[in-house]
Image (cartoon, rainbow, N blue to C red; front, side, top):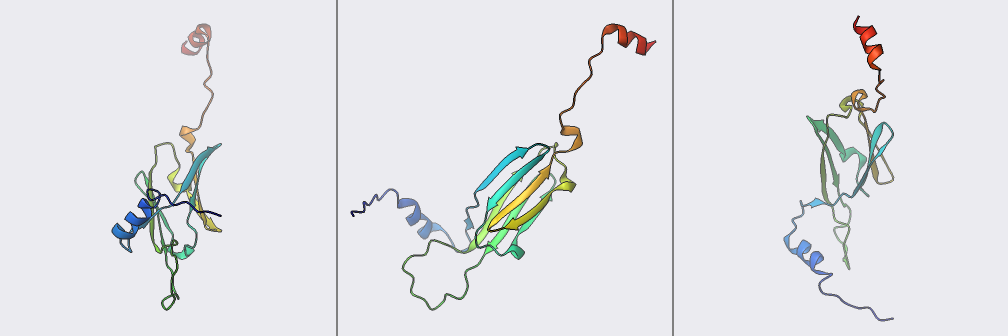
Length: 140
């Protein structure tokens, strides 16, 4: 078996190792979709202590913060280390059409799930169409 080496594919890893500080923010991939009368956000945060997760809403901004620590490995000889410790941070602008008081979050198997309900005033509704004769009877 022959393994190829592409120096450009390793450039991002090299740059990260040179320029990233130990406190650099880590990547937190998310999925966000609407399911009926709610938005659902899934954020991957493997290895994060659930006690370090902070989800808050300030005005129209949802912030997710978490900390991943790697302990008990001080006297080992590393051959490769791709699972960094550090801080996670993602922020999302919320529109006027969400129920800020109804937002809830849960964490299971390394995935944070945030449920953001749609406000009553933003839900689709049917508008009754009246004929001109009906409108004149109402006005009379």
